[in-house]
Length: 447
Image (spheres, rainbow, N blue to C red):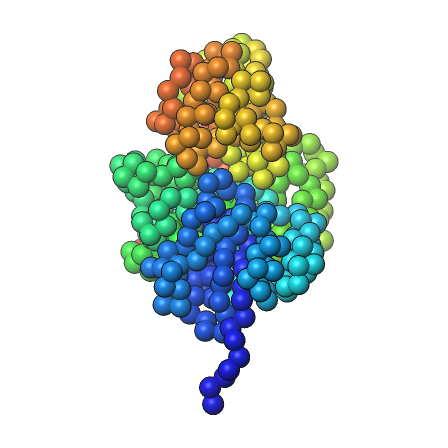
């Protein structure tokens, strides 16, 4: 007998990534629900767009609106929303409950979807690399694993957490194996930060909006997939080996942020990273926490080894530093690899760029007052790139330390010398190699 029950009306709280994935896997073809809107946070310039009908499916011939999260209460009341679903990452536990309280006060229910409902199953083995916070060093570890597997003859596809900041219909499922492919797709600086290092090592990286299609594409010619997670989010693919990184510069965060704590509790392997630059007491605190919470998990100690081709250009110079955007903004770090490089290579002075910031970059500094020594690379739009370029040009420094994973010299033009600083993951010990050998013996056939 047909049901007369009306579909429940849902709002998805998101940030252009996990939200689209959860919609695609759980809500898109569910006649018992109607997603009325996505809300947007963390990422600039994504509101006032629509999730297009071609991606939304037959139940949504007009697509789905994307509105600012600030409109949540009004949206709940105006659209008679029954349920609000939280679908984004790197929120403190307090922030999660503030969003829940706003939702409940407006009259709707509040939920989070579990991994069993949202993780896709691949036809090849999957190694996932995730973290407890943004900016811990996941991509460096992911590249280490990709290189380790390729050196042993395995075909590897790297899959990145989504960064759908452009035309969503053109970004459904993307494959990048060259700089020309990045140029053709007109990717943002934020995307280049993640894709360029893989391309530089001769690897292919996949990303997109619809991860069922991304998975189909990535696993075609691969023996194994490496999931390179974003922020502190959970993997979109069901992993056969789940590595989770803790940050020795931020002890305590591993149990204070969503869904980072869930990642930590799910970990098959725990990696305590940045042990070479963090205070010894921080490292010891994390090792003790990991041993107590995950006694069955192998415990890896890791470092991020800095590299630059021009250390002499930094020595004694007045430098301005551009760092990884998400790490410095919603990741909450006041400084990163660029500041470490400035100290290590003997910079004369780190110039505070805040008085010289303009436009969207000045607004970013106002929004994140903890920033001082580094400029976040907010390259989500052409305007932000222009504002970054002009801010650097106005800053009285001789050298720009580019500590982003992308090559900024390809996107901006300034009179100062641009010195790129990058880093690679290095294990302190041999536990990770043993773990990977065991994974290969259990899941992979030797070429």
